[in-house]
Amino acid sequence: MRRLVCVLLLLLLPVASAVAQTTPGTYVDRWTLSTTATFMGRIQIASAVTANLVLEESASTPNHAQRFALAQRVANEPDFLARRLAPLIASSIPVEVTDDGNPATPPVVETPWTDVQLQNLITNKWNLLASAFVPVSSQPPLLLTAPAAPKSGGQP
Figure 1 (tube, helix red, strand yellow):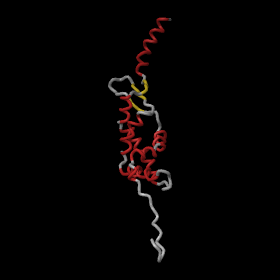
Figure 2 (cartoon, helix red, strand yellow):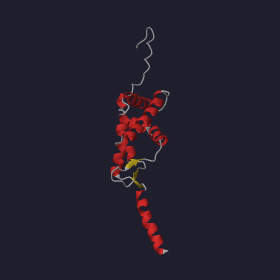
Figure 3 (cartoon, rainbow, N blue to C red):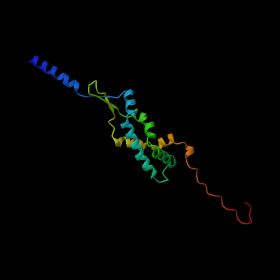
Figure 4 (cartoon, rainbow, N blue to C red):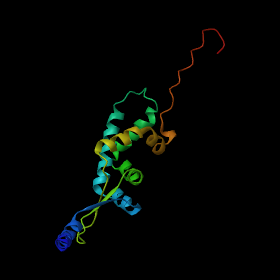
């Protein structure tokens, strides 16, 4: 009986080693994730969705000028934020590496974060991003009211 158990365990070992294993990502894995087209595309779309919302928001929204300027930049250059944010996001979210054990196929580096989680991250950080990527000088000047016209016959 003991021998039968040992044989069964030996037979199961190759099967167990062929099962994909998932491990937390290292710095290299995070860099790999940050440079993949799929991850960059997800960030680009999330940025575009937020930019569209900002372009339609009220001008009375706090920090609107900078928010709007960043949204215009994203609309004109869709990968602007994706190129800059991919390393920052990849360094701060969960990263998983799945290796099927086959030396002929590279490990898959991905994040378990959903599109909604990425979208919320970018939307919630839009003010901070606008402050970081839009110089204050690009804000439109404040509109000043013209001085009242002098009264007739009086000193200006």
